[in-house]
Length: 66
Image (cartoon, rainbow, N blue to C red; front, side):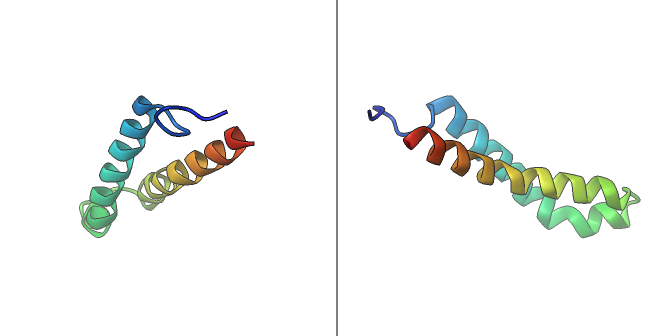
């Protein structure tokens, strides 16, 4: 069974794109955030959340394909 617009819905794709764009900005700004006084755990948590989004999307896509 195939979907008309791919494995993920259009809303999910927009959400993933937004999180990844935010993650790119946060990744570039990470040294500046640390220098500005943000705790290291906060910056690492932000980076881990951003890295988890595409991994979860791929796993969801693979699972729904079966």
